[in-house]
View 1 (spheres, rainbow, N blue to C red):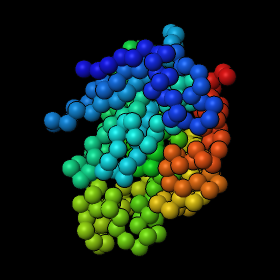
View 2 (tube, helix red, strand yellow):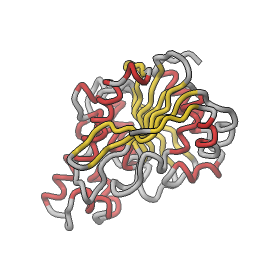
View 3 (cartoon, rainbow, N blue to C red):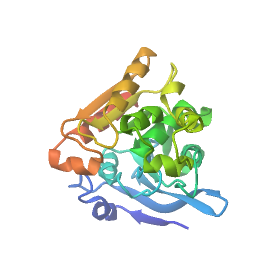
Length: 285
């Protein structure tokens, strides 16, 4: 079961969720909530889907929330993205995935790939342009989005990827803090840094899997992030470019971990993200 909300009502849902100027006008369309895209055992995986008014097909974004792999859902942390994407004429799908410690790696990334396949399979129903799908991930979701595409099968491929402050290199993340973080312990069920743990960290990292021919990436990261160092995105971009891939990096001056905290910085990152998506997905403005 799911709920459909026809817009104007969406305006009240997204009002105040984005930066200045983004939630002032209604975004005509339909919001379908709690749509099941997969069932794994007794776990129902659901998403919310916004489809603009009109016939489409529309450029589309699949959104993967953060929360350290252990918390959050399709309405957490990524709300600032909803209004800009809606008003720019994108269809979007914000997804849930199985959380640790109840569900260990790689359950979460398998769910992201399942969501991509589901959106493609239901493209006609939701007026999705399957050739113009972007995957957006935030924090833990950034790592999952990148891993789902870089190391995934053909069914997981998309036209663009936008990771926000992702810990792509799990080994680097652990060495930076010189300890196992709570999210790593929950995700892998490890308790100490030994050879097996380092193997798991390496195998769950995106950087060793990078190769030529990947879709364009836009990395967005605050320079005051105390949870995921900016070095993660700088290193990722360097490797991508060395392989001949298109990879841009937007650094948010004064930005900490979490786009919600960037509102007070009066950053234009949302406008820059939309412009980048329009350019890479070849969308007429």
